[in-house]
Amino acid sequence: PATVMGTQRRIKWVLPLLLALVTLPEVRAGILDNRIDPVCDLPDKLVREIEGYQPIVNAIVSRIFVGDFAGKTWESLSELVDTFGARLAGSEQLEKAIDYVVDGMKRDGLENVHTENASVPHWVRGFESAQLVAPFKKNLPLLGLGTTVGTPRGGIIADVIAVESFKEFKAFTAEQVKGKIVVFVPPWQGYGKTVAYRSHGASVAAKKGAAATLIRSITPFSIGSPHTGVQDYEDGVRKIPTACITVEDAEMILRKYRRGETLTIHLEMEDR
Image 1 (cartoon, rainbow, N blue to C red):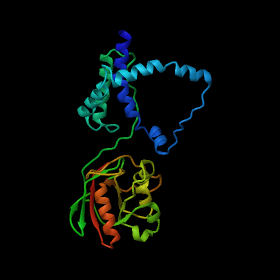
Image 2: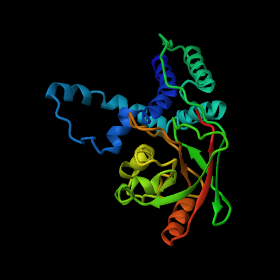
Image 3: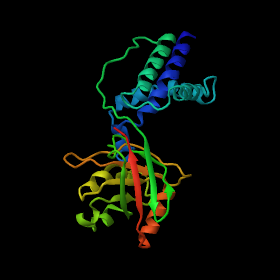
Image 4: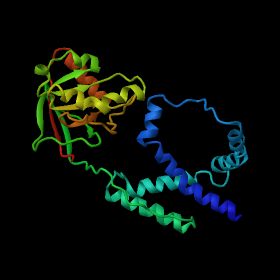
């Protein structure tokens, strides 16, 4: 019973942490770039050792999914998320969430529970607003992408260039792009391919003088909700504001732009 209880306690706290690990850059990169090889060549001795753990793994999996521990991991994870909300690196919410998990582990009798100091980048989401002001007025729900810079005070009012791909954007000259808000509207081709526009769109547009970029949310479908995520500024390239907008708004902007209409957006972001 003591061993079972110890295992249960570890499952309660370890599984939510494992779920969080899938968002780490190294893990995510392997998934997105399709670099996970289903075949792994190991020495026979190591294979036999690993296979020896199969009964233990089966027992744990059975208990989690159909046994008396069913739903416990979800309850623990949902309580953490509901209690502390967004937990960006360096934020007060993250520090409180860490203390909460550490206290819970100690309370459940786990050994050698401790924290370690670490330096992490700190980015703060501020007020964000986007509005189509011409040819008609329409609020555009948006979310700044992680680490984006903000706009100047009062925001940016600029005409739009809308494209589906980097290849299409390449045809525009720096003179055409300068001072514009570039809207990237890539068709969904799976997360691994489409996410490149969120990751690199800002720097690609900035090289030709764009004032800001808006990215179609990286998702196959939408219900009027923007999806945020990380983005990466290229070293040596001017940093410009970048945010995601809903699939519906992005595709509407692209349709109107291709009809030859002039679209103007007022973008205001206080992220830092």
